[in-house]
Structure formats: C-alpha cells, structure tokens
Amino acid sequence: MDLAYLIAAAVGCTVLVAQVVLQLLGMGGGEELAGHEMSGDIDFHEGESNLFFGVLSFKTLSAFVAFFGLTGLACGQLGVESAALQLLISALAGLTAGAVVVVLMRLLVSLNSSGTSRLQDAIGRTARVHLSIPSGGTQQGKIVVDIGGREVELLAITNGPEIPTGAAVEVVSRTEGETFEVVRV
Image 1 (cartoon, rainbow, N blue to C red):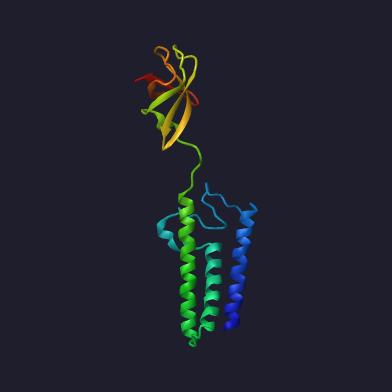
Image 2: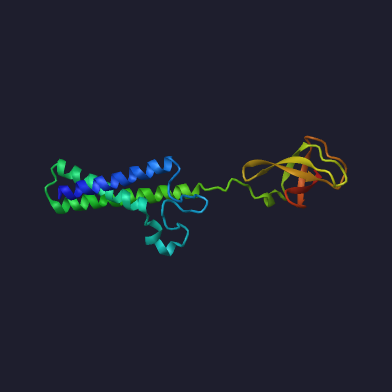
C-alpha cells in the first residue's frame, strides 16, 4: 500500500508544482479571471444545482491525489497499522485539500474586477470640478466623481454658466461617449 501512496504523492505533487510554475511563467493554460476560467475549471457560475461539476477541476483533483498520497505515507510512518484506517484518513485529508482549493478558487473569482467602473453610475452623484467647465455646453472640462469607491475623472459639459475648478456639481446625464452633463450645486 505504501507504493500506491508514494505514487499518488509523487504524481499529485508533480502536477501541483508544474501548475504553479506554469502560472508564474504566464502559461497557466487559459486562465482568465474575467472569464471565470481557471486551469480547466468548469465554470463556477453555471448554477448551484450543479455542485459536483462546480468543484471538479484539475487543481482540485491534483490536490486530492497529492494529499491523499502524502497522508497515506505519513500514516505508515506514524505507525497506523490498519490499512482501512490509513485509507480513511488519507481520503479525508485529500477531500479537505480539495475543498480548500475550491474555496480559494472561489475567493479568487470573487475578487474579479474588469478594472473599469460603470460610468453610468456617475449620474445623480455629486462631483468636484477638476478642470473648469466652459459655459454653452460645447466645450469640455473635467470632473472627479466617486464611483464604487474609486475616484474617476470624467469629461463634463454644462449648459449653464462656466463652472470654476473646485466647485461642487451634480452629474445629471450622459451626453455622448464618456462626456457627462453637470449642473452646479
């Protein structure tokens, strides 16, 4: 039985190390957090009813095999004589390692951000003028507005009088592209 544990540990650890090295070199095999694909993982967001396939991945299987083998070897070294007990302890350790991988992968996916704020969320918010906004609505100035906890600089126009730098404004609408109409508060 020790030979089986040794083979499992060797294969599992080799695959895990290879995955880490490939990721560090940028060759992780189609990993895209934005697309929720992570090293052959089946999409986490397909549906909670599909729990089995939501946790099945190459990383999860590799972690299971590696920790199954390592724990089996450790049990033998610690004097656990019963093969059934060794198998049970090894399987539990493998399942725990797989569960930890699933939790960590889900945490990584939850940290996903496209890096862009939803500009439409600026409407109705108060902003401050960063570069004065000329009157007449034809020339642009710049405003800084908080969108989702990030300060974003946007182009702005006004149909009212000129608004000086530092003044408070309210974003009332999006005109074209990334330009917003504002009024002084």
